[in-house]
Length: 239
Image (cartoon, rainbow, N blue to C red):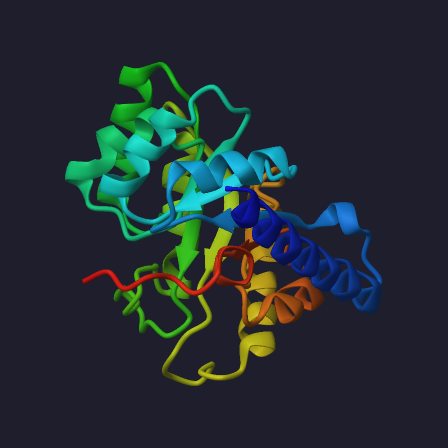
C-alpha cells in the first residue's frame, strides 16, 4: 500500500505541475481549473489514497463499478461525477451517489434523472454532453447531443425538478472535422458555453480534456479536466 501511495503521489504531483504550467501559459489562475480523477477500473483503496493526497473530485463511467465504490467511500468528502453513457435503467442507482452527471444527452434521460433525484431527495448537477462529431438530430459515437440540440436540452434540465444545469462537457472526437484537433474542438465547446450562459448564467462549468490533452483544454478555458491514466497508471484490461 505504501508503494501505491508513493506512486499515486508522484503521478498526482506531475499532473498538478502540468495543470499549473498550462494555467501560466494561458494567463489563468490555477484555482480556475478543477482536477477530476477518473478512477474507473481501480479499487476503492485507490480512491481513499487519492483523498488522503487532497483529491476531492472523482469520476466513474460504469454504474456497476461506481455504486459499490461510492458506498465503500461514503465516509469521505468527495464529489462524484458520472461521465459515461447512461442508460435510463441505471439512472436510479446513479442518482443515489453521483453529485454531477456529465453525460446528459437526451430528454428521456433528463426526465429519468429528475424523477430519481426527486425520489431520493437530492439535487443533481447536470452537464450537457456535446458531440462535436454528430450531425443534427444524432448522437455521437461516444454519446453526446449534436451542437444544435444543446439549447433545447439545457432548457429541459433547467426546469426539471431536482436537477441543476451546471454547463457543458465534451470528449475530443476521434473522427470528423475535429479529429486530432483537440484545441480547435475545445475552443468550439467554449463558444457553445458562452452562448449557453447567455440564457443560463450559472451554467459556467466546462468539462474537457483528459490525460493526453489537458493542456489544450486549459488553454481553451475549460474549468474541469478529467484525468485517469496520468494519475492511476495504464488501466488493466476489461476482459
